[in-house]
Image (cartoon, rainbow, N blue to C red; front, side, top):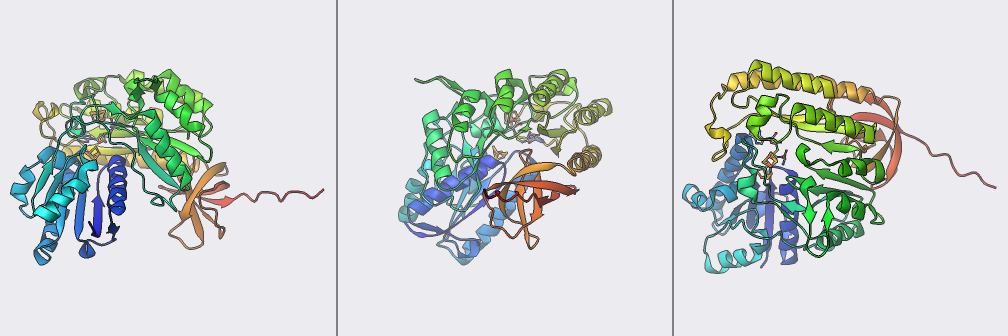
Length: 445
Ligand code: SAH
Ligand code: SF4
Ligand code: F3S
C-alpha cells in the first residue's frame, strides 16, 4: 500500500496519541504523511463527541473533505474516534462518500481495512468495543526531535458520570501490561523524548494483576527508574481514586512533575451527586490540602461544568466559592451540553443557553484573574524549565515548568531537551517571561 495520508485530530490527548499510533502504522506500511488534505490520497478524521462543539467541528471538516472527494474520486476518507464509535454505519447514510468508520478500539486493524477498501472498493465499518488494548507498535525515528510524548496506559472508563459520553464510546476500563508500557517508554526515551505523560480517562485507577501485581503508584516508581527520562506527568485523575500512596509519589519521585489535573466539575454537593462523581466538596478540599502538603509548589488544574441540569444560582456560587478557596492554577470550563444516551440527558431542570453562557463568562473571568495572580507570584523565582523549542517570538526559546506553565526566555543556545534554570521576570495571562540563569563556569585549579 502506498500514497499520501493526512490525519486531522480533535478532542483529548488520547486522540493525539491514537493519531500518532496510526501514523506510525501507516508509515511502516509505505504511506507518507502530508501537511495538507489537498495532497492526500487518504484522509483520516479522528473525532471527539464529548460536547456539542467538537462534534460540530468534526462534521464540518468531514463536509469539506467530502467536497474534495468529488474532485478526486480515488480519495479515501475515514472517520475515526469517538463519533465513529457512537454513530457506526449511520455515518454512511449521512455521508455516502465515506469509506471507513473506525471505532476507538479497532485502530490496529487499519491496514487490513485499507486493503479491503483499496482492492475491493468496499466500505468498512468496525466498532467492536470489547477488545483488549492494542500492543506497542513503535516505528523507529518517528519521535525524533520531539521532547515530550504520551503513552496510553489504560483505556475506557467505568465511572458513568451522568453527563459523560466517554464510557459509551471508549468502552470498559482495561489496563495495559506493565512490560508493554515500559517497552514503549524505553523506545521513546531512546529516540530522545525527555518527558512522558501517561494517559487514561481515569489514569489513577490503573491496575495490573496478571502474573505481576502493579497499581498506579507502582507503575510510576518503575518509570521513575528509566535512565534518560527527565519528567513524568499523568492525566486525567479522578478525585475518588486519588490514594494516599499516589499523593506520596509527588514527594518521593524526582521525575514526577508537581502538577495534577484533577477535574472537580462542581462545587455543590447536590450537583456532584447528580453528576455521579463519587466525592463531595469536602473530600475534594481535603485532597487539595494533602497534595499541597506533599509538595508546597504543587500546581492544580481542573475541569468545570456550568449549567448542569438543576444547577441553581446557589449551586453555581458554591462552585465560584470553591474556585476562590482553592486557587486553581488554571481550569478548563464548559457549558453543560446534552449527550445522547447519558442519564443527564433525561434530567429535569435544564438551563437556557444564555443562563449557562452568563455563568461560564463569570467563572472564566474569575479564573483569568486567579491564573494571572498565580503567575505573578512566580516573579523573581527561579524555576526549572524543560526546553521544548524555539518560541514564536524570534530569539526566544520556550519550555515548561514542572507546574506546566509556559516560560519564554531569550536564548540563542540550542538547549532543546535540556532542563535549564530560569528566573521569572514577567507574568502574562497564559505564559511567563524569564531570563536564563548563567551557570558559573567551573573554576580552574
Ligand atoms: N476523564 C476525564 C475527562 C473527560 S472529558 C475526567 O474524568 O475528568 C473532559 C471534560 O469535558 C470533563 O472533565 C468535563 O468537564 C467535560 N464534559 C464532559 N461531558 C460534558 C458534557 N456533557 N457537557 C459539558 N462538559 C462536559
Ligand atoms: Fe467521563 Fe466521568 Fe469517565 Fe471522566 S470519569 S471519562 S467525566 S465518565
Ligand atoms: Fe473526546 Fe473521545 Fe477524548 S469523546 S474527550 S476524544 S475520549
